[in-house]
Amino acid sequence: MKTSLMKDPRQIIPICILVALTACKTTEEALQERGVAPLTAAETTELLTDSTFRIDGDGWIWHGFYADDGTMRGKTVWDGGDKSGAGTWEVSADGLFCRDWDNDWGGGEYGCAALYREGDRITYVHRSGSAGSNPDGEMTMVGRGNVKSL
Image (cartoon, rainbow, N blue to C red; front, side, top):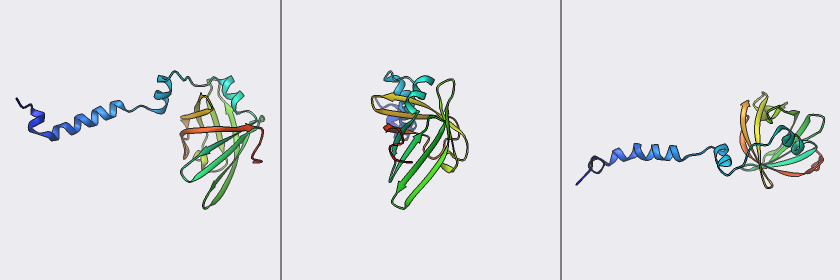
């Protein structure tokens, strides 16, 4: 016995799209399913204060230093050159890492992200304000202090 789907296979496409969309998870949902909770305000502050981090992008590498006075400095290097920036950072009462760059890295506006830690991997997920050009991703701690002399 043939069903209506067998008579007209084009009807399968919308069903497949619906199944694919419901199977997709955000980065945050995937972390939470693995039991990884966002860092608290105290944990985020401890992690970032007086530390240098690295983000590897597609053809670029960024390093950023978060000073204990709430200032930050960063530098992106790619085949075409490099770009530096500075700004301010803080941790909100609910634990969000908020920053405001003096260039277009943050989209020209203040933006905040939740931080998740899984071993050495730090995942950041945009939550509010400007998403900037790299709203969600991973960063790695390079070390305590301004180890890249930014």
